[in-house]
Image 1 (cartoon, rainbow, N blue to C red):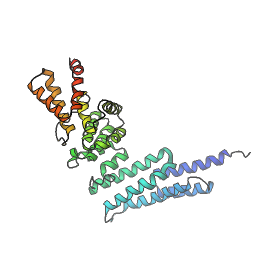
Image 2 (image 1 turned 180 degrees about the horizontal axis):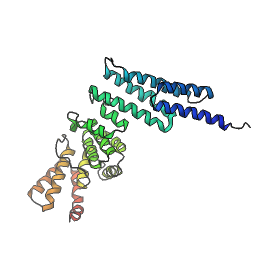
Image 3 (image 1 turned 90 degrees about the horizontal axis):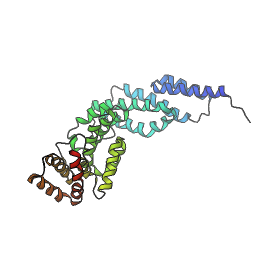
Image 4 (image 1 turned 180 degrees about the vertical axis):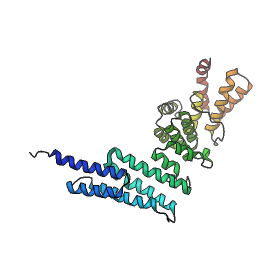
Length: 295
């Protein structure tokens, strides 16, 4: 049985670590030198192909960032985003924990370029908020998403706001953006619940489905308002759907019912019933519980 030469093995590991450090610093000269050193001590290293991809990329990336006469920066951003997503991220797995450092720097640089040239948010993969999100720059995600024209009615903008606010630790605002997303893209709401990683939101979504499995996500904000777990209230710019109408009625009823029953309460309850009898039945079942909790 052949004994492992721990010193030779350590040299290979050290050369690979030197290469990873150079790649992380975007130093193309040091990367080439470290790559040569690794091939010298370990010509059969299993990660050589991926390291070669990364060395070529670093050299290309430096030239790309310093290119001053690019005639179409927008097209370049689109091409670089695709390159990083499809080729560099898979190759960078050989960098271990340093992969995120490299990739985040790339996304941040692309985000700044995207913001500079004003790439349209319809190009979701290349819009600044999306790239800042991938870079983990959450305040910049919120900043760039908030100024999108008509953001209140764009599901992509609300996704960015939900994830950006969540990354900033602003839970209530993240939840409100997620609820607005439910009105705008109900069939994609499962995905945003998974992305936000908010245990309370996930629990409430599960409870909503248990209570009202015949209704889609457009009714979830109304369920949250009825359960008193709606977060920051949504006060204006409502999309047109039965779920948003129910939300407004539930919020209004919650305020009016504090002063007891009156004609307006009965009128609004009747309107709620007209919207959906299943939700209205749920609403009425919960009245006694919440009336007692308000005392």
